[in-house]
Image (cartoon, rainbow, N blue to C red; front, side, top):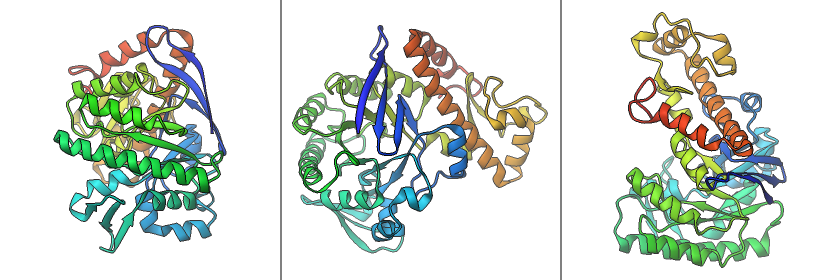
Amino acid sequence: MEFKVHATDTATGARTGTLSTAHGEIATPVFMPVATRGAVRALTNRDIDELGFDMILANTYHLYLRPGADALARAGGLHRFMRFDRAILTDSGGFQVFSLSNLCTVREEGVEFRSHIDGSRHLFTPRLVLDAQRAIGSDIMMVLDECIHYPATEAQARGALEKTVAWARDSHGYWRERFDTGRQALFAITQGGVYEHLRRECIERLLELDVSGYAIGGLSVGEPKELYRAMTELTLGLLPAHKPRYMMGVGSPLEILYAVSRGVDMFDCVMPTRIARNGTLYTDAGRINIKTARFADDDGPIDAGCPCYVCRTFSRAYLRHIFRAGEIAALIYNTYHNLSFMKRLMDRIAASIAGGSFGALMREYERAYAPGGGDTGGD
Protein backbone atom coordinates (compact mmCIF):
# COMPACT_ATOMS: atom_id res chain seq x y z
CA MET A 1 0.00 0.00 0.00
CA GLU A 2 1.15 3.52 -0.81
CA PHE A 3 -0.19 6.84 0.43
CA LYS A 4 0.33 10.23 -1.17
CA VAL A 5 -0.87 13.64 0.04
CA HIS A 6 -2.01 15.90 -2.79
CA ALA A 7 -3.46 19.12 -1.33
CA THR A 8 -3.60 20.70 2.12
CA ASP A 9 -5.94 23.44 3.29
CA THR A 10 -3.87 26.50 4.21
CA ALA A 11 -6.01 27.43 7.22
CA THR A 12 -6.41 23.95 8.78
CA GLY A 13 -4.84 20.51 8.64
CA ALA A 14 -7.41 19.20 6.13
CA ARG A 15 -5.83 17.32 3.25
CA THR A 16 -6.58 15.21 0.21
CA GLY A 17 -4.62 12.16 -0.86
CA THR A 18 -4.62 8.76 -2.52
CA LEU A 19 -4.38 5.30 -0.99
CA SER A 20 -3.05 2.79 -3.50
CA THR A 21 -4.06 -0.79 -2.66
CA ALA A 22 -4.06 -4.15 -4.40
CA HIS A 23 -7.72 -3.53 -5.25
CA GLY A 24 -7.47 -0.03 -6.61
CA GLU A 25 -6.87 3.57 -5.62
CA ILE A 26 -8.96 5.34 -2.99
CA ALA A 27 -9.25 9.11 -2.88
CA THR A 28 -9.05 10.55 0.64
CA PRO A 29 -10.68 11.76 2.80
CA VAL A 30 -12.79 8.63 2.51
CA PHE A 31 -15.84 7.25 4.32
CA MET A 32 -16.13 3.46 4.33
CA PRO A 33 -19.61 1.90 4.51
CA VAL A 34 -19.71 -0.87 7.10
CA ALA A 35 -20.22 -4.37 5.72
CA THR A 36 -19.80 -6.13 9.07
CA ARG A 37 -20.46 -9.68 7.89
CA GLY A 38 -19.58 -9.12 4.24
CA ALA A 39 -22.69 -7.14 3.28
CA VAL A 40 -23.85 -3.56 3.82
CA ARG A 41 -27.15 -3.97 5.61
CA ALA A 42 -30.19 -3.29 3.38
CA LEU A 43 -28.06 -2.72 0.24
CA THR A 44 -26.49 -4.81 -2.53
CA ASN A 45 -22.99 -4.64 -3.98
CA ARG A 46 -24.57 -3.09 -7.07
CA ASP A 47 -25.84 -0.25 -4.89
CA ILE A 48 -22.39 0.30 -3.40
CA ASP A 49 -20.91 0.37 -6.88
CA GLU A 50 -23.56 2.80 -8.13
CA LEU A 51 -22.95 5.10 -5.15
CA GLY A 52 -19.26 5.20 -6.01
CA PHE A 53 -17.63 3.74 -2.91
CA ASP A 54 -14.16 2.29 -3.53
CA MET A 55 -13.64 0.84 -0.05
CA ILE A 56 -15.75 -0.87 2.60
CA LEU A 57 -15.13 -2.16 6.12
CA ALA A 58 -15.74 -5.72 7.29
CA ASN A 59 -15.33 -7.13 10.77
CA THR A 60 -12.90 -9.89 11.70
CA TYR A 61 -14.79 -10.96 14.84
CA HIS A 62 -18.05 -11.65 13.00
CA LEU A 63 -16.43 -13.23 9.94
CA TYR A 64 -14.20 -15.41 12.14
CA LEU A 65 -17.28 -16.80 13.88
CA ARG A 66 -19.39 -17.11 10.73
CA PRO A 67 -18.68 -18.37 8.08
CA GLY A 68 -15.22 -18.89 9.63
CA ALA A 69 -11.65 -18.22 8.53
CA ASP A 70 -11.27 -21.68 6.96
CA ALA A 71 -14.41 -21.23 4.87
CA LEU A 72 -13.21 -17.84 3.67
CA ALA A 73 -9.80 -19.22 2.80
CA ARG A 74 -11.42 -22.02 0.77
CA ALA A 75 -13.55 -19.43 -1.01
CA GLY A 76 -10.45 -17.46 -1.99
CA GLY A 77 -11.00 -14.63 0.49
CA LEU A 78 -13.81 -12.19 1.12
CA HIS A 79 -13.39 -10.30 -2.15
CA ARG A 80 -14.13 -13.41 -4.16
CA PHE A 81 -16.70 -14.74 -1.67
CA MET A 82 -18.86 -11.60 -1.83
CA ARG A 83 -17.89 -10.72 -5.42
CA PHE A 84 -16.48 -7.32 -4.45
CA ASP A 85 -13.52 -6.15 -6.49
CA ARG A 86 -12.55 -2.99 -4.60
CA ALA A 87 -10.65 -2.42 -1.36
CA ILE A 88 -11.65 -3.89 2.00
CA LEU A 89 -10.42 -2.82 5.44
CA THR A 90 -10.99 -5.20 8.34
CA ASP A 91 -11.35 -4.17 11.95
CA SER A 92 -9.51 -6.60 14.23
CA GLY A 93 -12.70 -7.38 16.13
CA GLY A 94 -11.25 -6.05 19.37
CA PHE A 95 -14.02 -3.50 19.86
CA GLN A 96 -16.72 -6.14 19.33
CA VAL A 97 -15.05 -8.47 21.83
CA PHE A 98 -14.73 -5.78 24.48
CA SER A 99 -18.28 -4.55 23.92
CA LEU A 100 -19.34 -8.04 25.02
CA SER A 101 -17.52 -7.57 28.32
CA ASN A 102 -19.66 -10.13 30.12
CA LEU A 103 -18.50 -12.75 27.59
CA CYS A 104 -14.75 -12.03 27.54
CA THR A 105 -11.65 -12.18 29.74
CA VAL A 106 -8.58 -10.09 28.92
CA ARG A 107 -5.26 -11.93 29.34
CA GLU A 108 -1.68 -10.93 28.67
CA GLU A 109 -1.60 -13.11 25.56
CA GLY A 110 -4.96 -11.95 24.19
CA VAL A 111 -8.68 -12.05 24.81
CA GLU A 112 -10.68 -15.16 25.66
CA PHE A 113 -14.36 -14.88 24.79
CA ARG A 114 -17.51 -16.85 24.30
CA SER A 115 -19.28 -16.60 20.96
CA HIS A 116 -22.49 -14.59 21.09
CA ILE A 117 -23.86 -17.08 18.55
CA ASP A 118 -23.40 -20.46 20.23
CA GLY A 119 -21.43 -19.85 23.43
CA SER A 120 -18.29 -21.61 22.15
CA ARG A 121 -14.97 -20.43 23.61
CA HIS A 122 -12.24 -18.73 21.58
CA LEU A 123 -8.95 -16.95 22.20
CA PHE A 124 -8.04 -13.94 20.10
CA THR A 125 -4.28 -13.39 20.08
CA PRO A 126 -2.47 -10.77 17.97
CA ARG A 127 -1.27 -13.46 15.56
CA LEU A 128 -4.54 -15.34 15.30
CA VAL A 129 -6.33 -12.09 14.45
CA LEU A 130 -3.84 -11.44 11.63
CA ASP A 131 -4.19 -15.04 10.40
CA ALA A 132 -7.96 -14.51 10.23
CA GLN A 133 -7.47 -11.30 8.26
CA ARG A 134 -5.09 -13.13 5.94
CA ALA A 135 -7.89 -15.62 5.21
CA ILE A 136 -10.29 -12.72 4.66
CA GLY A 137 -7.74 -11.17 2.30
CA SER A 138 -8.34 -7.59 3.40
CA ASP A 139 -6.26 -4.82 1.87
CA ILE A 140 -5.79 -3.11 5.24
CA MET A 141 -5.63 -5.10 8.49
CA MET A 142 -5.94 -3.75 12.02
CA VAL A 143 -3.92 -4.96 14.99
CA LEU A 144 -5.65 -6.39 18.05
CA ASP A 145 -6.00 -3.70 20.72
CA GLU A 146 -7.79 -3.24 24.03
CA CYS A 147 -10.52 -0.65 23.78
CA ILE A 148 -11.86 0.71 27.05
CA HIS A 149 -15.14 2.46 27.61
CA TYR A 150 -15.73 5.91 29.05
CA PRO A 151 -15.38 6.60 31.90
CA ALA A 152 -12.26 4.60 32.78
CA THR A 153 -9.75 5.13 35.56
CA GLU A 154 -6.17 6.06 34.73
CA ALA A 155 -5.08 2.60 35.89
CA GLN A 156 -7.53 0.96 33.47
CA ALA A 157 -6.34 3.21 30.64
CA ARG A 158 -2.71 2.38 31.49
CA GLY A 159 -3.43 -1.35 31.42
CA ALA A 160 -5.13 -1.09 28.05
CA LEU A 161 -2.23 0.97 26.70
CA GLU A 162 0.35 -1.62 27.75
CA LYS A 163 -1.54 -4.48 26.14
CA THR A 164 -2.25 -2.46 23.01
CA VAL A 165 1.44 -1.61 22.53
CA ALA A 166 2.63 -5.14 23.32
CA TRP A 167 0.10 -6.69 20.94
CA ALA A 168 0.98 -4.14 18.23
CA ARG A 169 4.68 -5.07 18.52
CA ASP A 170 3.91 -8.77 18.23
CA SER A 171 1.56 -8.10 15.29
CA HIS A 172 4.16 -5.97 13.53
CA GLY A 173 6.88 -8.61 13.80
CA TYR A 174 4.56 -11.38 12.63
CA TRP A 175 3.32 -9.25 9.71
CA ARG A 176 6.87 -8.50 8.62
CA GLU A 177 7.89 -12.15 8.78
CA ARG A 178 4.85 -13.99 7.40
CA PHE A 179 2.79 -11.63 5.20
CA ASP A 180 2.99 -9.99 1.80
CA THR A 181 3.29 -6.51 3.30
CA GLY A 182 2.78 -4.84 -0.05
CA ARG A 183 -0.55 -6.57 -0.59
CA GLN A 184 -1.92 -6.48 2.98
CA ALA A 185 -1.17 -3.29 4.91
CA LEU A 186 -1.16 -3.12 8.72
CA PHE A 187 -2.43 -0.24 10.87
CA ALA A 188 -1.66 0.24 14.56
CA ILE A 189 -4.32 1.67 16.89
CA THR A 190 -3.64 4.46 19.39
CA GLN A 191 -5.24 4.19 22.82
CA GLY A 192 -4.89 5.97 26.17
CA GLY A 193 -8.44 6.92 27.03
CA VAL A 194 -8.93 10.63 27.71
CA TYR A 195 -5.58 10.98 29.52
CA GLU A 196 -3.27 13.23 27.53
CA HIS A 197 -0.01 11.79 28.87
CA LEU A 198 -1.15 8.24 28.12
CA ARG A 199 -2.26 9.15 24.59
CA ARG A 200 1.11 10.80 24.01
CA GLU A 201 3.05 7.83 25.40
CA CYS A 202 1.06 5.32 23.38
CA ILE A 203 1.74 7.20 20.14
CA GLU A 204 5.43 7.62 20.88
CA ARG A 205 5.81 3.88 21.47
CA LEU A 206 3.78 2.91 18.40
CA LEU A 207 5.83 5.23 16.21
CA GLU A 208 8.76 2.86 16.80
CA LEU A 209 6.94 0.41 14.53
CA ASP A 210 7.09 0.88 10.77
CA VAL A 211 3.41 0.17 10.16
CA SER A 212 1.41 1.30 7.13
CA GLY A 213 -0.84 3.74 8.98
CA TYR A 214 -2.34 4.72 12.30
CA ALA A 215 -5.88 4.53 13.64
CA ILE A 216 -7.33 6.64 16.43
CA GLY A 217 -9.09 4.24 18.76
CA GLY A 218 -10.90 4.54 22.06
CA LEU A 219 -12.80 7.71 21.15
CA SER A 220 -16.46 8.26 20.32
CA VAL A 221 -17.27 5.73 23.07
CA GLY A 222 -19.38 8.01 25.24
CA GLU A 223 -16.96 10.75 26.25
CA PRO A 224 -18.10 14.42 26.09
CA LYS A 225 -17.59 16.12 22.75
CA GLU A 226 -15.03 18.48 24.28
CA LEU A 227 -12.84 15.58 25.40
CA TYR A 228 -13.28 13.79 22.06
CA ARG A 229 -12.08 16.88 20.22
CA ALA A 230 -9.20 17.55 22.61
CA MET A 231 -7.91 13.99 22.29
CA THR A 232 -8.34 14.10 18.52
CA GLU A 233 -6.32 17.30 18.24
CA LEU A 234 -3.59 15.96 20.52
CA THR A 235 -3.35 12.69 18.60
CA LEU A 236 -3.29 14.25 15.15
CA GLY A 237 -0.53 16.59 16.23
CA LEU A 238 1.70 13.60 17.04
CA LEU A 239 1.03 11.21 14.16
CA PRO A 240 3.34 11.33 11.12
CA ALA A 241 2.06 13.37 8.19
CA HIS A 242 3.23 10.89 5.55
CA LYS A 243 1.11 8.00 6.88
CA PRO A 244 -2.69 7.68 6.54
CA ARG A 245 -4.73 8.49 9.64
CA TYR A 246 -7.94 6.62 10.37
CA MET A 247 -10.62 7.79 12.82
CA MET A 248 -12.51 4.69 13.89
CA GLY A 249 -16.27 4.69 14.39
CA VAL A 250 -17.14 8.32 13.58
CA GLY A 251 -20.02 9.00 11.16
CA SER A 252 -21.50 12.32 12.27
CA PRO A 253 -21.11 14.99 9.56
CA LEU A 254 -19.92 17.59 12.06
CA GLU A 255 -17.38 15.30 13.72
CA ILE A 256 -16.10 14.11 10.35
CA LEU A 257 -15.57 17.72 9.30
CA TYR A 258 -13.82 18.50 12.56
CA ALA A 259 -11.55 15.46 12.26
CA VAL A 260 -10.76 16.27 8.61
CA SER A 261 -9.81 19.79 9.70
CA ARG A 262 -7.20 18.20 11.97
CA GLY A 263 -5.82 15.90 9.26
CA VAL A 264 -7.82 12.64 9.41
CA ASP A 265 -7.99 10.72 6.12
CA MET A 266 -10.29 7.74 6.75
CA PHE A 267 -13.60 7.13 8.51
CA ASP A 268 -16.13 4.36 9.09
CA CYS A 269 -19.31 4.16 11.12
CA VAL A 270 -22.63 2.31 11.25
CA MET A 271 -24.45 5.53 12.15
CA PRO A 272 -25.60 6.59 8.64
CA THR A 273 -27.09 3.18 7.88
CA ARG A 274 -28.41 2.51 11.37
CA ILE A 275 -30.30 5.79 11.70
CA ALA A 276 -31.62 5.32 8.15
CA ARG A 277 -33.30 2.09 9.24
CA ASN A 278 -34.89 4.07 12.09
CA GLY A 279 -36.24 6.73 9.74
CA THR A 280 -33.64 9.49 10.22
CA LEU A 281 -32.14 10.96 7.06
CA TYR A 282 -29.23 13.30 6.41
CA THR A 283 -29.73 16.37 4.24
CA ASP A 284 -27.64 19.44 3.49
CA ALA A 285 -30.04 21.40 5.73
CA GLY A 286 -29.79 19.03 8.70
CA ARG A 287 -31.41 15.77 9.74
CA ILE A 288 -35.05 14.91 9.17
CA ASN A 289 -37.25 12.24 10.70
CA ILE A 290 -39.26 10.81 7.81
CA LYS A 291 -41.80 9.34 10.24
CA THR A 292 -43.19 12.72 11.34
CA ALA A 293 -46.72 13.73 10.34
CA ARG A 294 -45.65 16.93 8.59
CA PHE A 295 -44.34 14.86 5.67
CA ALA A 296 -47.69 13.11 5.06
CA ASP A 297 -48.51 15.33 2.07
CA ASP A 298 -44.99 16.52 1.19
CA ASP A 299 -44.38 15.89 -2.52
CA GLY A 300 -40.77 17.07 -2.40
CA PRO A 301 -37.63 14.90 -2.28
CA ILE A 302 -35.68 14.10 0.87
CA ASP A 303 -33.05 16.65 -0.15
CA ALA A 304 -33.52 18.94 -3.16
CA GLY A 305 -29.76 19.16 -3.65
CA CYS A 306 -29.18 15.40 -3.68
CA PRO A 307 -28.88 13.69 -7.10
CA CYS A 308 -29.33 10.13 -5.79
CA TYR A 309 -31.90 7.73 -7.23
CA VAL A 310 -34.16 8.00 -4.17
CA CYS A 311 -34.28 11.80 -4.22
CA ARG A 312 -34.82 11.85 -7.99
CA THR A 313 -37.66 9.36 -7.77
CA PHE A 314 -39.66 9.43 -4.53
CA SER A 315 -41.44 12.01 -2.42
CA ARG A 316 -41.13 12.45 1.31
CA ALA A 317 -44.81 11.52 1.59
CA TYR A 318 -44.25 8.20 -0.15
CA LEU A 319 -41.16 7.37 1.88
CA ARG A 320 -43.04 8.18 5.08
CA HIS A 321 -45.92 5.96 3.98
CA ILE A 322 -43.85 2.87 3.22
CA PHE A 323 -41.80 3.30 6.39
CA ARG A 324 -44.94 3.44 8.53
CA ALA A 325 -46.36 0.49 6.58
CA GLY A 326 -43.31 -1.59 7.50
CA GLU A 327 -42.15 -2.15 3.94
CA ILE A 328 -38.58 -3.44 3.51
CA ALA A 329 -38.18 -1.00 0.61
CA ALA A 330 -38.24 1.87 3.11
CA LEU A 331 -35.08 0.57 4.80
CA ILE A 332 -33.40 0.15 1.41
CA TYR A 333 -34.29 3.62 0.14
CA ASN A 334 -33.40 5.34 3.41
CA THR A 335 -30.04 3.56 3.59
CA TYR A 336 -29.27 4.29 -0.05
CA HIS A 337 -29.93 7.99 0.47
CA ASN A 338 -27.87 8.31 3.66
CA LEU A 339 -24.87 6.62 2.07
CA SER A 340 -25.31 8.83 -1.00
CA PHE A 341 -25.17 11.80 1.36
CA MET A 342 -21.96 10.50 2.95
CA LYS A 343 -20.29 9.97 -0.41
CA ARG A 344 -21.30 13.42 -1.61
CA LEU A 345 -20.13 14.97 1.67
CA MET A 346 -16.69 13.41 1.26
CA ASP A 347 -16.53 14.53 -2.38
CA ARG A 348 -17.49 18.07 -1.37
CA ILE A 349 -14.85 18.05 1.36
CA ALA A 350 -12.15 16.98 -1.09
CA ALA A 351 -13.19 19.58 -3.65
CA SER A 352 -13.27 22.33 -1.02
CA ILE A 353 -9.76 21.46 0.20
CA ALA A 354 -8.41 21.54 -3.35
CA GLY A 355 -10.30 24.77 -4.08
CA GLY A 356 -9.44 26.60 -0.88
CA SER A 357 -13.02 26.75 0.45
CA PHE A 358 -12.95 24.09 3.18
CA GLY A 359 -13.61 26.64 5.93
CA ALA A 360 -16.77 27.85 4.17
CA LEU A 361 -18.01 24.29 3.74
CA MET A 362 -17.40 23.53 7.40
CA ARG A 363 -19.36 26.64 8.45
CA GLU A 364 -22.22 25.60 6.15
CA TYR A 365 -22.62 22.24 7.90
CA GLU A 366 -22.07 23.75 11.34
CA ARG A 367 -25.12 25.95 10.71
CA ALA A 368 -27.17 23.00 9.45
CA TYR A 369 -26.19 20.47 12.12
CA ALA A 370 -25.58 22.63 15.18
CA PRO A 371 -28.15 22.41 18.01
CA GLY A 372 -31.23 24.24 16.80
CA GLY A 373 -30.25 23.89 13.14
CA GLY A 374 -31.84 21.71 10.51
CA ASP A 375 -35.23 20.04 10.72
CA THR A 376 -34.69 17.96 13.85
CA GLY A 377 -32.28 19.95 15.96
CA GLY A 378 -28.86 18.97 14.75
CA ASP A 379 -26.58 15.98 14.78
